Amino acid sequence: MASSTALTNDFAAAPISLRRRLMDWTATGAAVAAVVLVLAPLGAIFGYLVYKGIGAVNWNFLTQIPKPPGEVGGGMANAIAGSAYILMIASVIGVPIGIGAGIYLAEYGRNRFGDVIRFTADVLNGVPSIVIGIVAYGIVVLRQGHFSALAGGVALAIMMIPTITRATEEMLLLVPNVVREAAYGLGVSRWRTTLSITLRTATSGVITGVMLAFARVAGETAPLLFTAFGNTYWNWKINEPTAALSLQVFTYATSPYDDWHRQAWAGALMLIVLIVLSVTAVRIAARRGMKGA
Amino acid sequence: MGVGIQVDKLNAWFGKTQALQEINMTVAANHATAVIGPSGCGKSTFVRCLNRMHETIPEARATGRVRIGDMDVYNGSSATHIRRRIGMVFQKPNPFPTMSIYDNVAAGLKLNGFRDRKRLDEIVERSLTYAALFTEVKDTMHKKSGASLSGGQQQRLCIARALAVEPQVLLMDEPCSALDPISTGKIEELIFQLKERFTIVIVTHNMQQASRVAEFTGFFLLGKLIEFDKTEKIFTNPSDKRTEDYITGRFG
Image 1 (tube, chains in turn orange, red):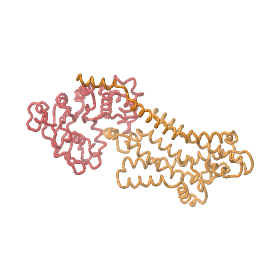
Image 2 (tube, chains in turn purple, green):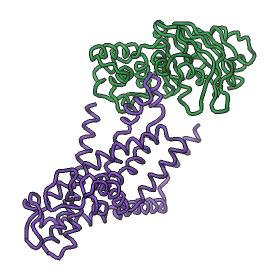
Image 3 (spheres, rainbow over the protein chains, first blue to last red):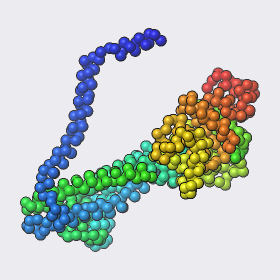
Image 4 (tube, chains in turn cyan, red):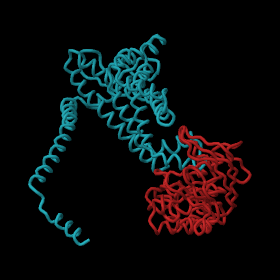
C-alpha cells in the first residue's frame, strides 16, 4: 500500500517532458487548423455575398417584382415568397414521408426489405438534382400539362426524403432499448411507444436531420428549372408557375444587364438569410415545444 | 391487491437456443419471491416470460402456461393488456429522458388514454408516496426531468411509474444492481411495504438480499429450476446438492 502511494506521488511530481508538451501543442494546433479550414470557406462565401449583395438590398428589392429587361429597379419580392412557398410544399410532402420511412427502418426494418429501402435511399441521395427535376417533370408537369409550384415542391421533396429518412433512422437507433422496454412494461402498445416515447426522445436529432435536408434543397436550382419554371409576377396558386430565388439568381446572373447582376448577388444573399432564419426559427420553436410538453 | 402466479411447463427460446426448460412454480400472493442463480441461468428470462416481455426480442419465443390470478397470460389476452396488470422494474433505472418526474409517473396512464387531470394528480402523488420518493421531489416534479435524479431516486421513480398503472404483480429484474448500498437499503425497505399490496417477484444476484426480502426463493441453473422452497430452507438446509454448492459460494 505504502509503496503504491509513493509510486503515484512520484508520477505526479515528475515534470512533463518537452517531448510530451510539443506533442500536446502540435495536436491542439492541428485540431484548431482543421476547424479554421472547415470554417474559412463558409466565412469567405458569406463575406463575399454580403460585400457584393448588400448594396442592392433595399426596400424596393424586398417589396417589388421584377421590372421588364433593361429597366433599372424592381425587386425579387415574388421570388422570395415563391421560394418560401415551394419549400413549404416540399416540407409538407417530404417531412412526413421521410420521418415515416425512418421510423420503419429503425423500428421494423431489420430485414431484407429494410436493407433494400436503405440502399435505395442512399442511391437516391446521390442522384444528380437535374435528374430529380426530370422525374418531377414526368410525374407532375406532363400530367398537368403546365409548370407549377406543386411540381417544384415535389422535386424538392424527393430530394429531402432520403436525407430525412436516414437521419431519423440513425437518431431513433440512438435511443437506448431500455427506454422502449420501459414503455412496453407499462402496457403501452408498440406504435404508441414509437410515437410518444422513442420519437419524442429523439426529437432534437430528427429536427437536425430535417433542417439539414431543408437547407440542402433550399438553394437548389436545377430541379426547379422545368418544374416551378419561374415567374416574373406574383403567384400563390399551387398549379401555376412560380418564381424562386435560385431561379431568379440564375436568370439575372446570366443576363447582360449590370443592374440585374447586382440583384443576383443580393438574391443569393437573401437565399442564405432565408435558410438561416428558417433553421433558427424551427430550432427555437422545437426547444419551446419540448419544454412545454 | 396482489394475486398468485401459477407457472406450468414453461419453456423459452432465443432462436434455437433454449433458455428455460420445463419450469413449474407457484408464487404466493402478497409475498416476495426471489429468483437466484449464476449469470446466464435464465432467471431474467423467467420473469420476462411472466409479462410477455420475452417476446419483444426478435426470434425469442416461449411455450407453456402462466396464470396470474384468473388471467391466462399466453392464452386469450393481449400482451399490452397483461403488461398493464404486471408492473416491471428493470436492472438499470430507465426513466423517460425527455419527460418531467410527474410525466414519467403519469406516462403509463396517459399513453393508454387516461385524461382525468385531477385523478392523475392523485395517482402520481400516491405512487410517488408508495415509492418513498414523494417528499424528495414534490416541489420539483413538474419542472425537473426524470433523468436529473440520482440513480437511486431514478430507480424509485421507475417503481412509482410501474405502480401508477395499479398492477397486481410487480416484477423486479435485479433492481439494485446499479445502486449504492444506501439506495439498495431504501429499495429493500420499499419491497417490504409493497408486499402488502402487490405480489413481488425479484431477480437478484445478491443472496443476502434474497434472504432479507423474500419469503420464497427459487434457484435456477442452466435454464432449469433446481429448487424452489421457503427462503429459510433454501439458505439453511437445501435439498439439492447444486443449490448448496451455489449458496456456499463453490461456483457462480
